[in-house]
Each structure stands twice: as C-alpha cells, then as structure tokens.
View (tube, rainbow over the protein chains, first blue to last red):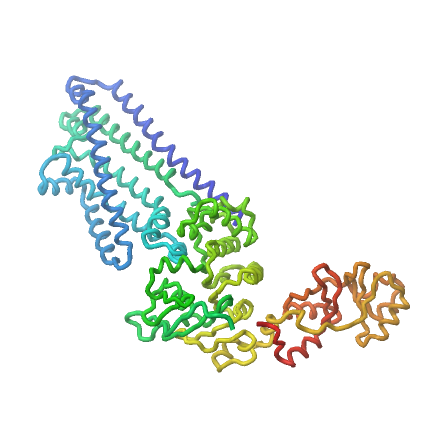
Length: 253
Length: 377
C-alpha cells in the first residue's frame, strides 16, 4: 500500500506532464514545417492570392468561432442532459440518447452538414448546429460515465449525513466526475475544430476555404499551409483542454 | 430501564413486484444510551431496518419516533443531520481533506468556522489521530483502519444523540478490527450515545451490544435481550443455530477478570530466603508460589521441585511469568493466558503492574457452572 501509492502517483504525473508538453511540441514542429514550405516552394500569383494575410486571418477567426460556439453549445446541452439521464428513473432515455447520438457520430460530418443545410439553409449557424450534434456524444457519454463511476458508498454517506439530492450532485457527484467530463469536452473541441474544415461547403467560412481553393487551383503549398494552420489550432485547443484537466481536477484524487 | 429514544412502530418495507416484504411489521424500541445490535444471517433485512431509521429507505408502512417525536413525515435530510451514520465502506469524500470530511455535518448545520475547526481537532483526538498530522491529508493517504476512525469522527462531529452503524468494522483486518472495537467501547463509555449497530458476526454482537436483536428473514425479531440472557436461554432453535456451538465460550467475552474470585497462592517478595520459600510452598495446596520483585511485580512461578533441584539463586529458579492479566481483561483473554501458562494459572496485576492475585482454570470453571455472574448490565 505505502509502496504502491507513490509509484502510481509518479506515473500519472508523468502522463499528465506529457499530456501538457506533447501538443504544443507538435504545434511547433508543424509551424516550422509550414514556414519551410512557405520559404522554399514556388509561390506564384495564384498561391499568394489564396494566402493573403487578410483572408487567412478571417478564416482563423471563423474557425475559432466555429470551434468555440459549437463546443459551448455541446456543453450547455450535453452536461445537463447527462445529469438528467443519470437521475433515478431515466435508464431507458439514457440508452436511447446514447444510441441515437452514436448514430449521428457514425454519419460522416460532411453528410451531417449537408443534411442540416437542407433544413436550416446556408451560413455559420447551421454549421455550428451540425458540429454540436456531431460532438454531443463524447461529452454526454463522459458525463454519464463520470457520474456513474462515483463510488456509491460516498453518495450513500453524503445522503446519510443529510445532504439533499441537489447537494449530493453539486458537492459530491459533479466534482468527482469533473476529470472524466473534461476529457469528453476536450475530445469534442478537437472534433469540432477538425470538422470546421467542412464549414466552407455551405458558406460557413473557416480554413477549409484555403484548403479547398488550393485543391481547386492545384496549388499544394496553399493546401499544406491551410492544413497546418488547422492542425495547429486543434492542438492549441487540445492543450487548453489538457490544462483544464490538470487544474480543474479536484485535489486528493 | 432507561427511556426509549428511537421507536419503530409496525414499520414495514415492501418493494413492488416482490411477494415477501423486506421488512414486515417491525416494532422495536431502542433505549437511550444503549448499544443495540441487529444481527442475523445475510439477507434478513438488518441493513434495511437500519436505513429505515434515518429514512435512507422510506418505509411503506408504520411510524418512526425519535425522542417521542414522529419523524415519519419530516424532511429526511433534516432528520439525518441529527443522526450519525457510519457504513462499512466508510465513504469518505475523496476530494475533501480529513478536516473537511469531519466538518461535513457542522457545515450543513451552519456552525461558524472557528467552532467547526475546534470541533474537528477534538474529534480527531477522540479517535486517537493527531490533528497536526491528519487534518490536511486526503482520504487516499489513509489505511483502512484510519479511514474508519475518520468515518466515526465524522459521524460524531455534530454531537448527534443517535448513531447508526452498518457493519462499521466489517472490512477491516481482524487485528485492527479488534483494536477499533475496544477503542469504540471505551469511547462509548464516556459518550453514552444511543447506537444501533448492524453486524452479521455474532461474536461482534456479543462484544459490542448491551442488547442484541437476532433477526430472521423479513427482519422478524427472533429474540431481543441482553447478550447474557440470549446465550444462556436462546428463545428457539433458530437462535440456537445462529449462536452456533460454544455459546459458553462466547459468554466468556462478556465477563471480566474482576468478576471472578482470585485464587490465593503464596506470594514471595524479593529478597527471600530459600527456607522461607520452601515453608510457604508447603502450606500451599497448589505447591506453587509467585515470586515478586521488590516493587511487587510478578517475576516467576516457583515450585518445591524447582527449588530443590537447583543450586541456582532463587530469582533464577522456576519458570518466568511472561504474560499477566488486568482486572478489565475478559475471561476469554484469561482462558488463553492460563492455557499458555505452564502452571494452568494466570497472574492478575493492577494498572501499575502490582500483583493482585491469581486466577485458575478451576475458578473459571466454577464460575461457568454457577451460571450468571450478574454484574453486567
């Protein structure tokens, strides 16, 4: 017991540290790769017209908005839903939700965006909605799993000492589920940033525009730089998630 | 007898879809300041009964009274804050420090910070844990025994009159369990809480309980009485079977060394001459004497044979006394010591280690034959 504990703690600390170090490291490597491509390949007038600072900036902002807005939407839907279905008397709803959202995730994101387009028309809002639907499952599932893995004895002790059901939820269950829930959110954000590449097909903007233009005009430097920027953004958000996981984790766990 | 503090009146719990109720029509009085042990085979509904008292399980029929007040309908959370609750798995909050864990109920009741903090230290000291060391630790840093100490401290923090304990020492290794049981009994002597204690272990029930309720299926009371009465007069075959063989041996844990008459054998205090020793031994029917040092602490068993056979100084003859008993030890402990001892007797000393007398297997046997010692309550 006394011997096993420190070893385990050390290992998980190492894993945590790697989790925080690796994404930025990859981002740096990708940035260097991007600059090398930019410096050493033929940049003709078409390529430079695709890669103007102004359009890149707008596309990056679009991507960030898409990622943030859809993830925020997921948060405010999936977490309360996850809480609701783990309360007593809802096991059927839980199975139904997890199954049907699994179906949404099985569809290609591309298809989902197009389906949403036929209902809600073009524009960034439709994309946000489609992305949110697509990434709802990881957060919902992790909220459910996170709440269900809380030791029943701890909940029983809390109830037995006079916590109300709300107090048990807020001061025992949710804090103890935080690490698992955040892991789900992290997955959702990375999915959303990645899938934001498809936003351009229904006029949602984003770095997909640059990548698509490069493809259409057959300009590989443009494709590569668009893709690298998208990847760096995804890694940056992943790092934010790793930091949140580390600092929002309850002490003593 | 003392006042009734908890009263269950025709309480029942039936789950929909099952034929037999988990608890059927149970009426039970718990007296103020007593430890009432609910004991029975697994599945008899003893834990369910316990949880009906603080309404973690809502009864489907009957009334529950606490201090004469009907608490069947009041807000269960308010009720539970007045009742300490200890469970086998302890259930400490892993994300809170030991101090925060203990402060749970005081915080719910809105105590001020200074008062709560002082109470936490008191509670840690009560369960023999140093506040300076343990206050700010987290539960994962504790051993099983320490965790349950904190569990007990947490349950007692808001000074409830009533404590419900569901197999509190069930998941702890036998040695630590024994120590915790003894500590808990000592605590209870000062605290005089009203305790309902659930266990499946009849030995633990006999050790911990002022009264024992033996339950059969459906939480029906087969017999409720003092441990002595149940051991000497089981109500029916079920109780007899449940007590198992060796009820007399179990009864020995109920009586203390001070309850039996000490045997008078010669005690020789150092320094003593060989002639003197031999003379004393001659007059003793057991042909054995106890050699004491000059502070009256027992040193060795000496016999005539050992004195004659050897030319060694008297303080080296005979057999050394390695274990002694105190008046508070149980007769079961005494029996163990006597069986180990070379002369079939055990010396009894006071707290300071001074010789008081001896107890022998014969005195134990005559006590068992004569039946009730009657000094326990």
